[in-house]
Length: 312
Ligand SMILES: Nc1ncnc2c1ncn2[C@@H]1O[C@H](COP(=O)(O)OP(=O)(O)OP(=O)(O)O)[C@@H](O)[C@H]1O
Ligand SMILES: [Mg+2]
Image (cartoon, rainbow, N blue to C red; front, side, top):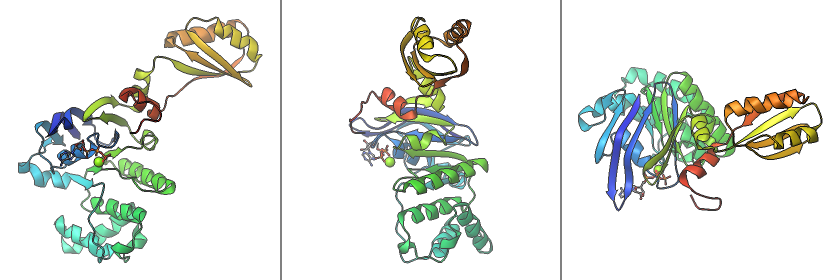
């Protein structure tokens, strides 16, 4: 539904976006993560037809994004920029009605569309509020309602959770998930990593204009991982089990805490099964064994080669 092929937008001085290829299937949420200046907004603007690429192509629902197709593309996309214009004097209703007109929604249908969009953004109560009186979080909800007015299939949101408090972020995530459940295809950007891992079907890690990793959070984290941490819950003596583990090939470290063993392991999945068998044969009673997941933040640091304390 959203696709780019070797897309580049070169601003000169090695700034911009280079050779970026991504593909977001219908009904998926794609998270575009990267530090400030990575090229998120640039890519988004090219996708929305607001910037011409220097090379490569972008497609929305297989329609190439180019000036000739701008009308079709605009119908397909709801674009939420990272900052929005000021319409301080207008009421929320006037503001949304104005955008209905811009989307050429017939006058008779506008009130219904505005009500529906505000409902989806959980902002119905704001209908008569003045735009200038809205808090940042309220503004984001109205911005979300605005991009839903023409019922687009694709939502492209640049830093939708930026500036929201923790509660606001959770609410925004829930709304985004609900929109995906309605069948929307969503691309969103963020420089805040944990925020994305729970909602996205796929993520792309971008830095200095280049896509460094692309796939599901699980794929990215497991492809980067050279060793894993196994958590083994047992019912028998932890010290005996720990020493059995330590003798097993590729076990790098074992820590015990109560009836849990945490095993740093550099072996294969087959070897996990063998470790399990060995323990059982030696009389260790295992209640559970699971692989601890690396989080997206860890993956990001590995991909970009950054370390703690470095500015992002
Ligand atoms: N109009 C422009 N002219 C020249 N360079 C630009 C222009 N817009 C962006 N850039 C440069 O392109 C790079 C990517 O910028 P972009 O705004 O796409 O980053 P971003 O990932 O959205 O960052 P942020 O998280 O700060 O929003 C940066 O180096 C930026 O300085
Ligand atoms: Mg940006």
